[in-house]
Image (cartoon, rainbow, N blue to C red; front, side, top):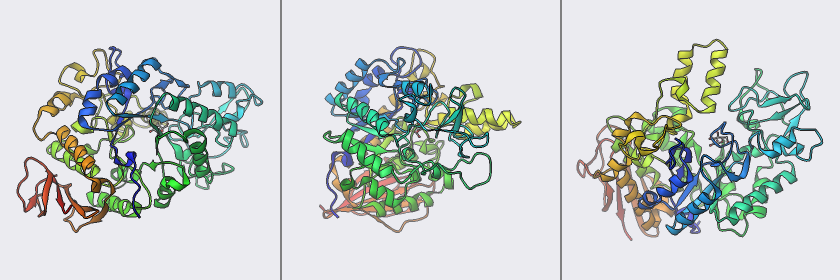
Length: 540
Ligand code: GLC
């Protein structure tokens, strides 16, 4: 099937975690004016759209994913006027801005929830999910992401409310049409301000299993997402939102879709169904978590999605984000071959089908941050797990080790701009520690170095833009040595061949055609060096 051409298929998106990007006023927290001041770098890199994670008013229990006012900018990030300035400045440079739409839940400080908990007959009561307990216990045995139970008891009305994440993030009740209409009003309000699209946070969770049944497993609380998400009404809700909030605007929607099957991805992105433009693919992003450092598995996963989706659906591809460790520290080698492996992974990301989404810092090969003490950590998920383990008599040192290995803070450390104090991120005390390796790894240095990671990303983005085969071409896997990916993208008489070595071994490979991109220290035509990547073109 021919792929209809769309700007968002040809775009490269760059994710900004505002809190850690650039501080402009010395309070140690990144802000909107800071982003604006750095637009030149993003424009030089060549990205088309910026996805900003939440900067709205929030008590910040989950770093802004607990919103207390959808229409207000959190004071630490600036003002609405700063956002308008940023939009205008980005648009002037030809860059679009996507917001993070957190509509599975709000903060417990949101006025809807403040009202909702007041009484059983409050007009906002059914904006959230309230139930009676069962025999003095929670309404069911569901566990949450950031707390043991997915229910919290509220003594005032004697009922429990449901939360997929922390108790401070009560879930909205999508079964209530009045609640849905209130969200659509808010979405249109932002669209009228000129934003260009949305990343839909935790969107699979808006539709639960009807009746909220107990999980049949053993244990008091069972954390099993299947019951909390992808309920039968998901597609209906997305279609309604599309029709009632988004229609008439030329915007893009990218869904954070958990537990996605190939058929789900095809359905969600099918233009005729008018649901989403694309879901994120999490299987490649989670491959390390599931299988460890096994490039063969990554190859199998990517090949399965590339061949399964081609001509039938569309996806957003990413190897890093604010919830997951940095890929150069996983599938790459962030010590001996940091530069080479970051370039190899970049080559992979930018030559596959699906809209590439970069995460701040990957373009300079930033690595996972590790902190000394538990007080140095911030992530609600890690801290709650730590407290619970220690409260149950666990060894604090072992619990700290666990935090070091799993905390989301690993990828949230401040952006490393230069070798100046605090990496040029702030003149104050950073809200989360800067990775001490900033004196060696920083943008200033990287931009200046020949063959640097930044330059490689820049060349790749430019190449993708002028090579439709890299966007629309069919993916054809070629025989390759272990831990090496070789594939072609074929489109209208043009064949692009990509070879990416994800190992520290030198392997035989003989590319044919015009060499479009390679690493500077190429060993020779008959081999690929450790973590080397190359792109050739034939025809056209
Ligand atoms: C998403 C966000 C994550 C947040 C969660 C709850 O998974 O990416 O950071 O904690 O939703 O909003």
